[in-house]
Image (tube, rainbow, N blue to C red; front, side, top):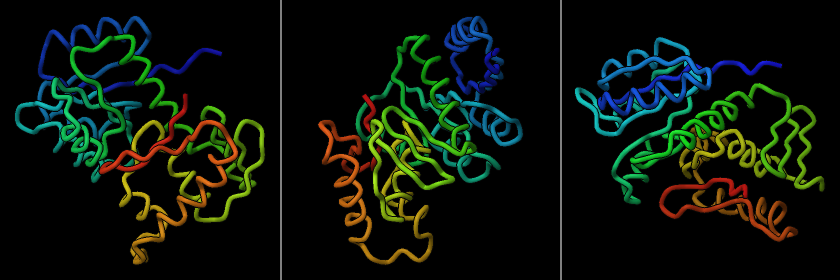
Length: 228
């Protein structure tokens, strides 16, 4: 079966970088749109349908942080966003993930790696529409509420099930503590230790019986799945 062509938006003001991405991605069959400033990029992102957005951090008119934040607030559907920047400090990454970036790639980067990351994110964002989520050794059947790791059945309580579902749907993006609480409890969340308690129960079921822990804590940022 022929693979569906990805439609990708590249928001980048460096013309040479945009040309390099265009040359490589078009050889892979992708369809691309380009914006050389943040304002145009934001307009395209919220009015057109894209499978993935490649977003530079330093942009004229509107920087990448502001673009990412407004896309998350205004877009009608979730769109995976890869942020690109020459700045690779933890504070920069924390800021990017904090406004909703899914992935972070430091310049200079390998074009094949960028392409693989775009494909992975596009596929992850399509999975929530399916009845089954499969990531590495983890399987969640959203219809029957059954969970497995490496073929072994997992008995999860409702809140740990919801936490795992959010983490799998977001993978490989890091999910912040506040986002997890919003997804699970919404405005009703009041108990500060509740999430910690449910995460402990989830880890006890999904990680403790196995040799390799999957749930990863990124201190000061949030939680993600470590699929290796």
